[in-house]
Image (tube, rainbow over all chains, first blue to last red; front, side):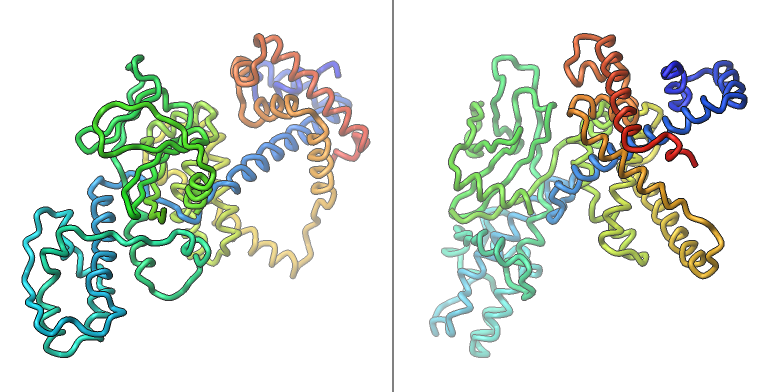
Length: 276
Length: 190
């Protein structure tokens, strides 16, 4: 095609005013050129459509079920953590599956050592355990129970109960308002403050927990990264970057290298959560 | 170990995400898609749209956003979400108008519809699929993403812009031949 480049520029809008004017005049008097332009327009349109289909197919692969709110204040993660801790600690303490409390147990208002340790926090939100408890207690005990929270000896070290993720994954469409449903509502909107530092050549792919923040050392510009925080029998933090998971020791403040996780079962479990 | 995972998205700020989209980073587009999915689809669903329609509109809006950002002419004067939201609104409004018009046309049967167009598009799509991956990329990057020859050379690892230019020319010629082989040129003229 003799006019290939010219037609290409015309369709792409890359001719200057003068060139465009000349081409349009030529177009008016040249039926062959008109055919060529019409044909090329169809082809270019087809190429664009192919690209649009490709982008849309790519977007369709993006998991959106657990759409997240970004840019939340760090406080929200604390709220989420406290809420889960409160719910699970409350469940453990009140044990709604048991019918009575010891008859002579003296109930005292505990003095929480810190905000995080105080299981009475957010009881207004995490109402499931007390409500169930109210049903099972005798009236007198019930009244006393409602006025106070949890004995200090048990409250200081609440054992965060574990919510089995497999059950959640397998029963994601369970309609009942279970305690895990409430917990999920809190935890999905959580956030950890993260900084990246690519200027330190001594640490090409390392991390550090410092002053409540996670610092990632190395070049993290080439891909998205995600932080997965885990509360089960123990607390754990994971980094997902470049298709790999890395375990992060959040109790240590020293700079440590990022080591990729190779345990297939753990990877599978983390993948299930990420894809939700 | 039983797990409770707090799911957290990218830590990129909005300015950085936009910058990456401008540079053609598809991962950044995916992050935006995920981030605003509920907000954008809700707009359609609460305005007589189905979930499928909502997803379609949102994806179309992101395609528009991608193309505008890639062109280098887009300067965001509002939040990115506000901008994308306005595209969704416009697209959904157009779609509702189209539906309404279509409904009236069915009653009137006054306007003729070009029945060959979808068939032609299908043929071109098939011919695109017959090209090798590099050719497909070159043509899509040039004609849709409007990348420069330098960008195409960098992205696809060509030695220089001349190589990219030659490749683009040959690939386009190849596609033209394939399409012509399926249909005579007259079939493509309205």
